Image (cartoon, rainbow, N blue to C red):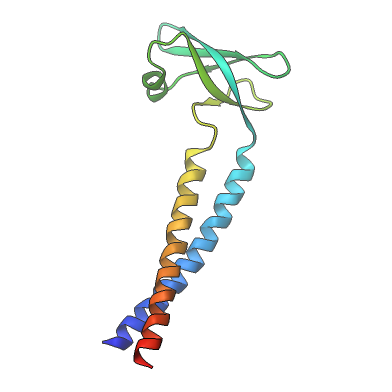
Length: 131
């Protein structure tokens, strides 16, 4: 039975550290490709078939984006909203500064690295308990 626990701890430590490091690298690349998002104050307008938000960017251009159903639900009946827009783009906006996809991959990487660390500690404890 102790050999089975040792084998499982070894497998989980390799899987945890290997996949965790790989996903951490993927999250970093995703973060770099996501670009820079800046906060702006936008005007919310009813467009008949949905809502639009309009804002001024740093260069004085006017940006416009149609809200998704979830974004409409989050903003509600407000006339103004604090949003985040991608620098250099006049049609990309979101309600959070960080990307939800990057956040999800980063948390998965943290979870796998934690699994690897717990498996490594378990392996070391089993080594000294038997020795």
